[in-house]
Length: 398
Image 1 (cartoon, one colour):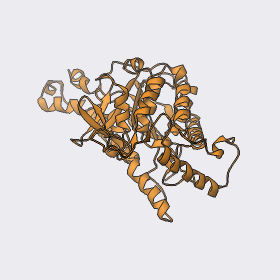
Image 2 (cartoon, helix red, strand yellow):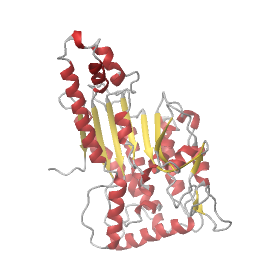
Image 3 (tube, rainbow, N blue to C red):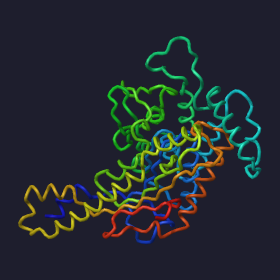
């Protein structure tokens, strides 16, 4: 009887594909990839995904916000053996300026180092070009005339992005939630409410992913079924909590890939102030969410243990059933990967889409996930005594 009353909170019906990287005998039912928003920094996430593929780790749930949602569309919209290739095509496409030739340093071999002051100056030039020219297959400047209405009130037109997504993602495959669940977050412009579009509940179209990345005033609101939506990062830039809170709760291994670092140094000048402001604003305090979820799961586990002490005859009491709905013995392991700023980057790093920067971000993501997976014990199942664990290759000791 007690087991049945606890089922709604914890019962699991699906599993994950076998992976040589996971420990033998693991009981993970969800392997999730959670992708934060961050514009041009999103190539870091593509590098992380390449490393997961190399290890034979194929998530069965991908959740994203903003650029994380666009990466999610490419991942879920392709078979496993094509995903890295399609991500590369996506990032190569959108890291080109559509009008003038590439800035010369983008054509240099990645091993050819540039002095940091020159890197900073060239990065600023790339960001300036993005503002003036737009980005190929992504967005283009919108003429100021005729006057804009509610559907075009923005500096840029993102209609090229729809064509790019349709070319690089198979939306029939993407909507097969049995193969991979997909969740992307956006904000309803009129109500201000945050919503998740999820292929387990509705059919997702390119517009759902474009809405997740429609950051005003640069990009226009996207209309979906008569409602208008903006970038989910305006409310929450990290879709971690919904994955950890989903019912029925499941044993979960979560790769949380962040593009903004909540921790940083006191800015030395106004330019660094603007950069630090963005880091704090868009990091969405992922570590705080992780700490909260760890504490919550410890209480759920404790509640379950206390319920075992209740006599069988008393387990039909309404209070017991309410407690059973909250108790849970599921285990959670969050692997945290956070993009680390480079000294030459400025506050424009999220709209510096240059090809060289894209390659550097991608390489950083690949290096971080390889370093993470080089610690195989980090993938071990948590224990009932410690039901929620997290790991971070960049976490400072103490």
